[in-house]
Amino acid sequence: MPAELSPIDKAKFVAARRAVDFVMPGMKVGLGTGSTAAWMVRCLGERVREEGLKIVGVPTSTRTAELARQVGITVVSLDEAKWLDLTIDGADEFDQQLALIKGGGAALLQEKIVATASDQMIVIADAAKEVAQLGAFPLPVEVIPFGWQTTKALIEETLVSMDVMSREVTLRMNGDHPLITDEANYIMDLHLKRIGNPRQLALVLNQIPGVVENGLFIDICDIVVIGHPDGLVTVRDINAGAEHDDRVEFAATDNIFADLAD
Ligand code: 5RP
Image (cartoon, rainbow, N blue to C red; front, side, top):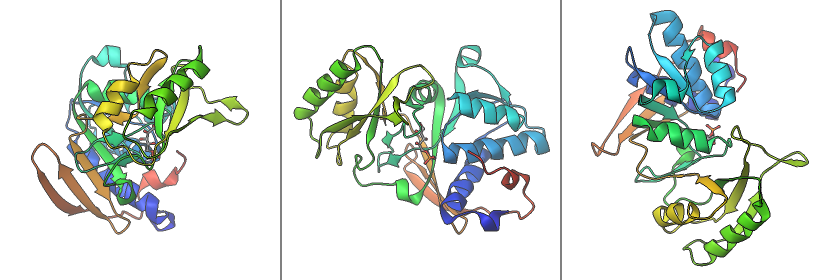
């Protein structure tokens, strides 16, 4: 029941619910990964089941693919869809230009490929994800396991000449072992505290052999939908330079609240 949701989950839910209004019949939709994106997948599934909305979804992780199938969304691969109308995904941070840090859920590689292959990307987030400058959230970088310690040293060396506040690099773990992504890679988390020039950092990191992709999404996101626990949502469109507020009502009988697992 919605009353049992935490304030943060209410904020994520209303952002997700508002964002799925952008999905039109016949669209090919990129489905993001994470707890906010999971709400979006549930909301979209509800539209598929209750309105008979005909869409196909391209998931950005195995866990999103599983949830999408569970809620009734037809899942296809990116190679089948080729190009998408819209991707809706969460973010770890976004700034005024809608530059993002993503990859907190270790899915940044598929997320970036899918978002880049979309006419439009909408980010859904609670208000705490908005920052004046990116970098408080550790920047995830996906690296191949072969020679990862050398790649880590090269990342550290590269950071010396970058405009960042801190330069600690850690290998993301899953218990006693390195976390393995869907693409069988590792994740390095770059604890930078402040990123002075995200565009430059994104380019430079991707020049390092062993780095597959970084979690900086620059000039990819078009719209951010910011949710608040009281049902208020702010829709900010970077291309139109416009922002407006809406309200999403909670439906006490809503089916999607029956399943709160991410
Ligand atoms: C996964 C991501 C997520 O979108 C990001 O971590 C936000 O997650 P959440 O919605 O759970 O806060 O980038 O790789």
